[in-house]
Each structure stands twice: as C-alpha cells, then as structure tokens.
Amino acid sequence: MFPKVKKSKKKVKPYTEVINEQRGELEKDPIYRDLIDITSYQKPKTRSECLKLKRPCLFVSCKYHLFLDVNPETKSIKFNFPGKEVWELRETCALDVADKGGVTLEEVGAIMNLTRERIRQVEMRALQKLRQNSSKYNIKNFSFLSGK
Image (tube, rainbow, N blue to C red; front, top):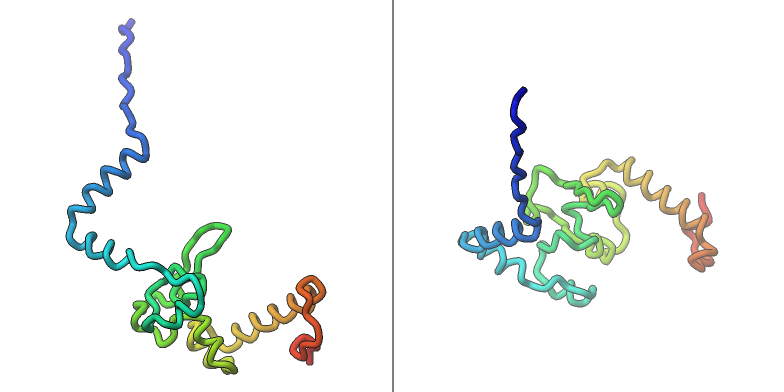
C-alpha cells in the first residue's frame, strides 16, 4: 500500500487583513488619491444644503439621484442611463424635478429614461396605494385620490 501523505492546509488570511493590504496598495496610486479627495466631500444632509450645491449633482449615492437605483432588498444596482455619464444628464435629482411643479408624463419619461406609458402606470399604482392607505397616513380631502 501507499504511505499516507499529510496534506498541508494553506493558511488563509483573514478578510480584514486582505482588505487592508489592498487598500495600502491602492493608496500608492495617484489616481486613487485623487478619488479620495473627491469623495471626501460631505454629502448634503438636508434639502437646503442640497440646493446650495452645483448641478449636475455628483452624489449618486443619494436616494433621490436619478442616475442609478439601488434595490433595498437585494442591494443590486440598476443604472438608469447606461450610455451616459452623470454630468451628461439634463436632470440628476428627483427633488429638483418635483420643485419645478407640474411636469408632463413625456417630460418625466425623458428624465427617467422611461416611456410615457410606463410613467402613467407607475403614477396609477402610486395613487392606488395612496387610496388604499389614506387612513393609515391620515390623508384627507385630496382631489387626486378621488379617482376619475
């Protein structure tokens, strides 16, 4: 018979140690240092702080930013404008669009990179949810809830 050979187990580094090593390597890269400088700016915490900033808004991690959507359950990212960069967008903030007041379905569709029909469907679904939950959210006497 064959003699038993001991298999040596590879020593696996802890995850945090690997990350720290990778970070150390990246920090030597001048491009990475520039990115750290850019990202060190504080994201606005209130709408009034947000209004003072230059447009287009570059804080794509903001939940009101139109460039990408993050699914809260799966944490997956969906790029709304795969062929464009953030600075190429006409509008970057949903709150800015809302501040404009009445916007047509066509305009919202162009801003969101969706069709007019899809915007209409989303609007109808939102109104239906508001009607169903009007007592829960204490919504009274709003003409848009009465239906057509």
